Length: 158
Image (cartoon, rainbow, N blue to C red; front, side, top):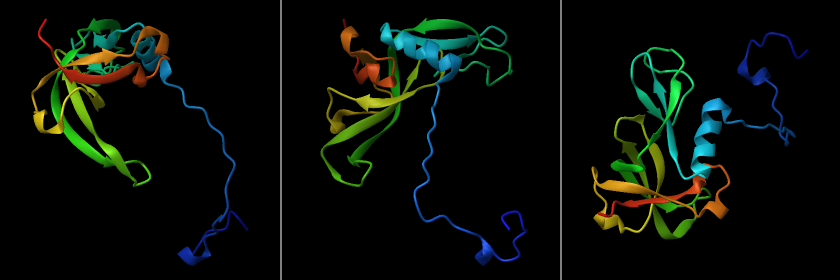
C-alpha cells in the first residue's frame, strides 16, 4: 500500500517516466514593481523606513528588522563590480563560441546587488571594484524582465 511505512530503502517506489506537471511562477509584489521599473528604464529598490536599509533586488519585508519595507526608491544605475566570472559553457555543457562575462554589481546605498552580463569590455580588463553602468534595451524591446537590462558596461565619464 502507498501509505505503508518502509523498513528498507529498496522498498521505495520510483516513477520511471515523465510526469506532466504545469506550474506558474509569479514574481510577487516587490518583483512586479521592480520589473515595471525596468520597463521604464529605472532601477527601483525597496527602502525600509524603520531601520533605513535599502534592498536591491527589492523585497517586501526588511531582512534586517522584518518590518514591511515601506517605500520604493529609484537608484542611480551606476555600481561597482563586486565579483565576476568568465563562462565558457552553456547550460548543456556545450562550449560557447564567445565566452560570456558575468558580474555581481553592487549599487551605492543598497544591500544586495544584481548579477548580469558584462558587455563592451574584454575579460582581461575587468577588475573587482570597477565602476560600471546599466545599459537598458531600447524601450520598444522591453518586456518587464531582467533582460530589459541589455548588459552592464564600464562607466563612461560624461
